[in-house]
Structures are given as structure tokens and as C-alpha cells.
Length: 67
Image (cartoon, rainbow, N blue to C red; front, side, top):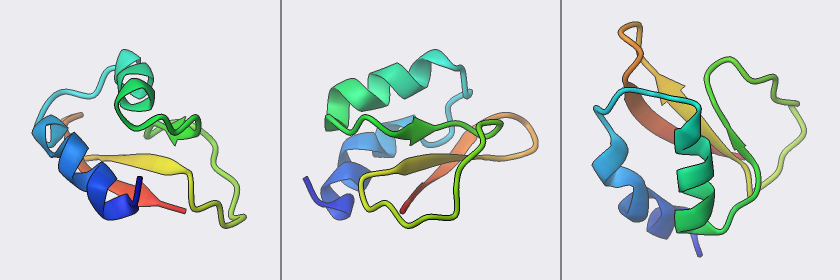
């Protein structure tokens, strides 16, 4: 699945409240095993399979980044 396909599959989550269980849900939807939340430590090493969840100050999901 490409990053564009992942974005399309996850777009319904944008604006929803971030909870830790959403990482497991994203893994189920995308079959990508490396999903990181806003407080998770992420290396700077490039990994095209990684999804990083972007969250705003209110705690709502606002974006998904890759690599």
C-alpha cells in the first residue's frame, strides 16, 4: 500500500481525539507495523513503512506523516 493509499484509508480519523488504541487500529487498516503516537520516541532514520500520527494542542489527530 502506498502512502497515498494510507492517507485515503486514514482520512476519517483526522479531527478525532487521539487515544493510544488508535495505533493498533491503524496497523489493522494499513498492515504497517510501525505506527507512532505524539509522545512516542521516533528515530531520525528514514523508514518508508513508518506512520507518525500528528496531533494538535487539543489532542486531536491532524495529520499522518511517513518515514
